[in-house]
View 1 (cartoon, rainbow, N blue to C red):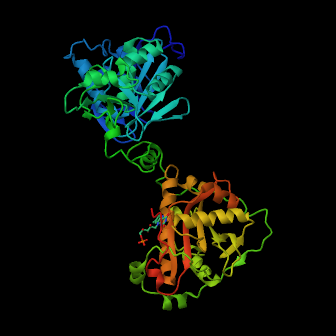
View 2 (view 1 turned 90 degrees about the horizontal axis):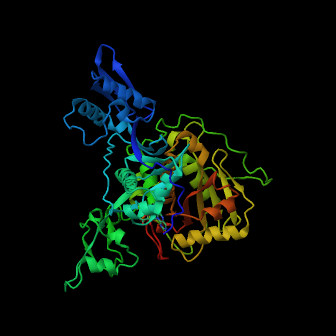
View 3 (view 1 turned 120 degrees about the vertical axis):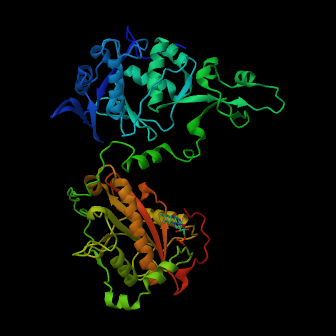
Length: 536
Ligand SMILES: Cc1cc2nc3c(=O)[nH]c(=O)nc-3n(C[C@H](O)[C@H](O)[C@H](O)COP(=O)(O)O)c2cc1C
């Protein structure tokens, strides 16, 4: 195949450069000049630094990528004497600070091609050159995004991120969208085999490329062995299936279920099988421990931005909701344990509309803003990013339509929602609750994302979903206590609700849905009729 890769530089040999993460400092201990102190974002390490080669190497590495051969001639020469004490001292120092060491591949003229950056304390980078016929593929969890100066290749399964500095490096990575051998890739890119071996060794050690293992065919009759199986594999060129790098420990190959005799460990790992790359990355990056991205762990100290004025284009009059007498509620309510023990999701076809008094009481007891003490449900950093929209089917006191709840004024603001969108919201909610008709009331929770993104960078979305859960349970408990049938929903259509409530979905959109129906006294403790079709 003719390559259309970016033209390869004339001298494509790769050299290895070493540097320290920018957040790492190196100094000598004041009262002990033979000891150095390396401070990383995770720890402080005391090291013997009597040998000037060691201190010079670390100091140079704080300025940026450096060839250690320039500090200690012959450092990278694998043929040099293993017993060389200076080399051994430098190696053991690099090993001690390995979680702060960035490894870079560059051309002989200094052009940096790719860098592998450790992102956790436990990171360990030990690249090895793969065999020329070794087959690799990009991990299905690898993602490429735009960084500040480079393309960033990362994976939730990796202890490193890889910065791709040049078009050639990106082209190499793109060769591995499908399984390919080192030899094939070198031919495609028109660069020497050893260059690809070195680069692939880096990408494999960083967890971005995964090595193939070759499956062995299990044929009870023994008529066909691995070789004939290889020949029969559709699209399998010789390079992609042979050679020591392809491995043989992949287990049995059943051509019926698996058309290709190659396998990748991550595809067969039961712990990974059901993860989508997107969700695993969100999970990984929204908690500390497995990456180095900034997380808003300070607890929302930043001031939340002011929201735009509410409903600027409407002259509708807000509907003042009834306020319950909390003394009466206290006297009438079942005890907490009774409520908890009888709480159920109620999905009843033909559910009754809520009276205005019921809706007012429910919203007051679950979601109103209390002047001195937040709201009845908790909110991380007291940011309260959730907004409530109430859509009613309209057979009760409230006309059919969508309303926005104002938790401070305890009012419902009627929205000028297209009736077709009201139909769509209620129809979807009914279907998601397994009903054959519309639910009488749908509460849609939206989030004003800026409020949380400012207070909790990096963890805003996961915090938000936890808050939805807290509000959902508050709605469950209060409606159960009131004899109203509640049911949480797993999702709602983001585009429909954004149009219905007049929102720019990027700034505010649906994050939680909840349906309600008034049920005859006593019926809320058990499901009644309308067998649901979908109950996540
Ligand atoms: C986050 C969440 C999402 C849910 N989504 C749905 C849904 O889409 N449709 C539905 O009928 N029930 C839904 N439910 C209700 C669950 O199916 C219900 O809680 C579960 O079956 C346990 O039954 P119980 O609530 O009666 O104890 C959801 C519950 C939660 C907490």
